[in-house]
Length: 145
Image 1 (cartoon, rainbow, N blue to C red):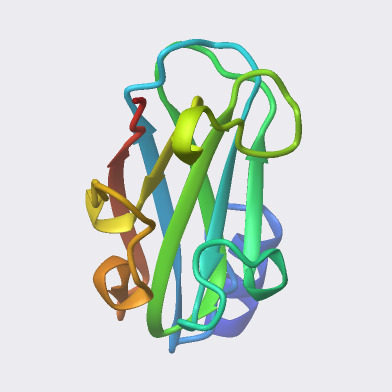
Image 2: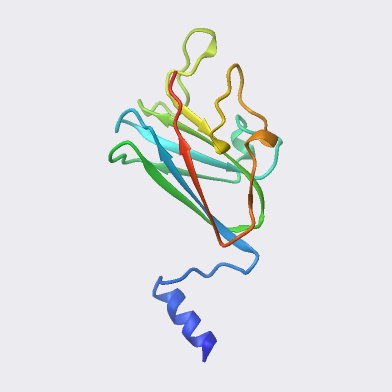
């Protein structure tokens, strides 16, 4: 009877069908300077390639419609473990980060743990966080130079 009830709740979308050793990461991104463009959030689960190698991305989410100065994305059914986030606000929808003098980003970017790097992107070790429960909520701020 309990399995039938669980299946009905999952089918109705009232609960998720996550495995007991998996969870969700909810990323709340604030401090967007405009509603133009799109926000790309990339999830990594290993240090190799973080944060620049697109082939190293485990999952990514794109928000095409920005309403206000914040967006939220959700990654689901992830095995417990270590993860890191890299994100960017592609305001002109060019498909990549626009850079100015000396490679300084012209568009918004950010990382898990709200790291604010000075001269180069942070390492996976500095950006990593642990998913060890059914849901982890992250509140991250977009950085603009």
